[in-house]
Image (cartoon, rainbow, N blue to C red; front, side, top):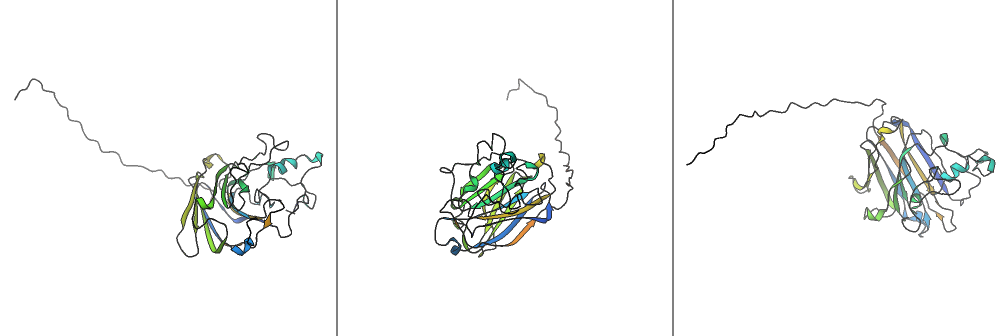
Length: 294
């Protein structure tokens, strides 16, 4: 997608999004994926106003939803989506080729879960409201900017775009309290129990053992969702995230060893489990005798 002409970012801004389409997985079974990243402290440029967020996600769409930068970290802004439907108003967001920016089937759907590591915490914010986001149409739930938006945060949204996890990294790990790392750090994600639970693990370069960063209860089952046998894994990166004058782009972030494991078949295997008959203890009849004295 070409960059929208209505949005201006610094010259050194970067936004990147991909979906690994060479393999599709059946989400009725566990899906595990991992990658290593290297984000040196020099990339922060010795200031606290840098903005960088990267996210990984499971999606039923074989192409990226968007590559747009901003608080949605590669996802679509619901206000922009609704705005693009009203072409008569002349306010549609256009690409450089004058094409309207809109999502497939005009729906904010396709992602089962998205996990963001956000230096600003803006991914947890409530989406826009107003005339382009009437109740139930495109509004994205979230937190307030002044109360529950944390720097260096982990934020997780479910398939309804609800925030199901939002906390500073420092509350989960003493060694992984900031996104920057001067050696490669490996992150692993385990999507289990029919989409009810997500484990997030971390491993530093000086060990071969993962430690649990957090477990997120996603509070839903994918049993009621369609297209469960065509699930892809994706990744997005954005820097900076907002357009505030003080927002600065971060330096280089390196990504390697993107690895995915899961069941690659559309057939759900079932097995009937039987148990042996319980043993029966016979009850011998007894007679109560009364009026006996010693």
